[in-house]
Length: 439
Image 1 (tube, rainbow, N blue to C red):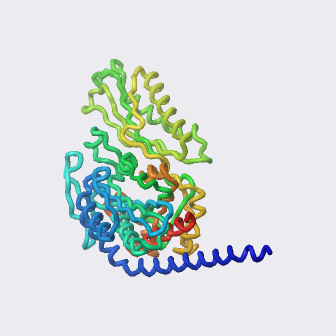
Image 2: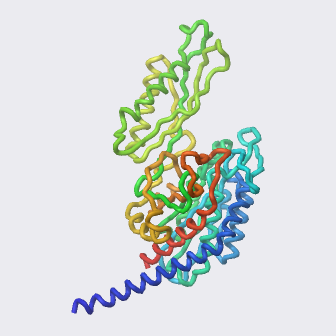
Image 3: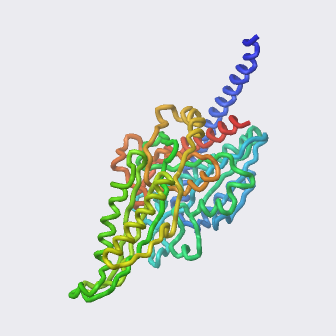
């Protein structure tokens, strides 16, 4: 009797597996077929980059493509963001897929036929503009995913929300005074994760130092929370020949910087989580023989847990304040100063559930567990609203030396386009597998 009761379930499981496998084969064929289009989109975006919240041309191209696929398209979200909604033919969950759109104020040095020649004004100076972090790749990949999944609309168990987000690199300095937020934070504030409410969100980032054909992942804290900080040290100005008449903010600032090094080395349980406290800019004075009245420092704090974040911020405040008091100076602190990103946190249960889909897409040997990294991503704002996974896609030419790969955010940044198709397949299969587990 037990065998008879198990038989229908077994047949159902076999049938579901066969349907899923057939879908993966279909997706693989379609992804291979549109590889040239994906590469062409990427090259066009690369040649015509736009800074955050100024992605006007970029957004128009994306919106036109999504509209051509029959999607419901919304534009102008968070200034230049685009969202396409694909409603499947069958009921099911809502899956969000995200790509970022903005370039950086970097002048390209790579000798490519589609290299950027764009110039713009940034912080009062003319600069080059370049996709020096791979956002052009992310957009092209997601456009390919939209094309494939829209062609499978009748069989989709749920809804797909394609999110093309501006200003992942942050807003322009001049826009901070107007209360502008990072692209993801602003899109979430404007309701992009609602109506319909998102059940799971997936995204990826291409990496110049990771071999093409691989995907890396990490359950839990993947990329750090970030708080930038401003510390203004206020003293008393004096002639440099008579320092005893001053309360020297330069010396005080130097002591504060040295003392801040003890936060990570002496206050953090480093076997649990890493963290970073960095002072990246210090400005004060304008002559060799004048002790200034104030010194301004800018820096960043990177953490992987709310408890560590709270502790480190409090220690930074205490160290800066008490060190200044010991010298007769005062400080003004702002943490965060202009931006705060939460931890990019990959839901462990969701990772475990989706890992087979990734392994079936790329092969187990090409799906690799990675170390946490102290870089930050505003994808984390979406993960605060729904369980999510942020993946890392290889963009290093096969056989290349990772230690010699040009770094992100630099003029020599380079990506091998052969890995794009894997990104398309991975996002398609994650979407379908998630829907099929929830139907």
